[in-house]
Image 1 (tube, rainbow, N blue to C red):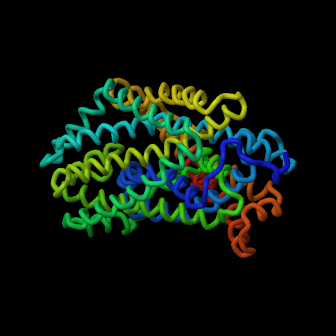
Image 2: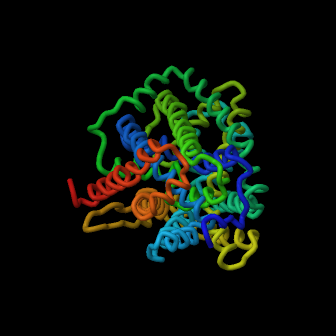
Image 3: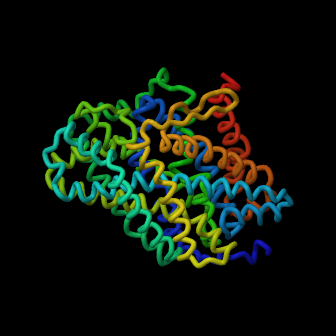
Length: 464
């Protein structure tokens, strides 16, 4: 099939705005509001944030442009897109494995992402009941501990979240995914701003800003740099097939460069605002910024319990956090669903059900990591260097996907788009200015691949 005649059998976005909202919905989710603050706390604050922002600008944006461009040119699931583009460019058919890497990464991420989203879903009802009204930091911490130590409760919330995700995905591009993000994302932004004003009133706002934006490079390790780079991929949904499959639904006339820049700015702004909301609350209540995955569930409820109309605002916040999680989860499973529809002749409903069941089953391992399997750990050794040691099933999946699979996927996306595609192919698809194309091609050919490889080689001990 010639590239001129390719169309997606799944439909396309109704407009550039719809694509930006959907891709921003994929990027903006638990990664910004749940994960970014706690990994910033674990990795020392300001220096980590600076490295993260550099990774977004120099690596994230050019690779995101490349991934959207490959998706729109291929107009299929990531696996079939890479197979078609490899054939078009006279490259080996094994490049389809890059598509599979993204599909598998998205599948694994969703399996534990759904468990954390289940926490948020349960907090909607806990907040609405007034459970946090006037609660102390110890009281809020106890509520969270009771939740994660109950596997039956976690399983119920995980199941509800996955069922809702599959319902949205089964309805297709325009009637499911596009409708779900059109109203929910702007509402989340408004509520974040309201919470930011509250955080400014805690008396610890300047301390929170100092922690986030005053770099102390003595606290930065090679592992921290890898986490920052991995999170740049995680938060922009790169290397997991989501952006490639969303790009395949993008109208031909839409500017990839402008849309990508807007998505990256919105996504990064949400992460920074989330940090500016959470860290002042952390310091105001003498909490530990490196408290780990439970950080957001042990800080914001304190604020909601103390503010006027806290029950209402808190309930709405966790509702919209759940919706932000859904907008990301539907993009994580979409590549696998699209492949089943294209290659196995399934309906979207059947493909959604089978993918959902597989993700749900895998997620059981993550939810047990917080209780019954808390003492079961794994280690990962590469070239004699221990990358993960004594990690739970949840931590292992998180580290393997965010810090290994996504950067590797991004590296090969950069190599294919920058070095193996004919310049006339990428120029035609990007349709940007000569100067803009020159900047992009240099970043995607040289800067991004070298940065990814140097960080990897440093972490695995090949260079020091």
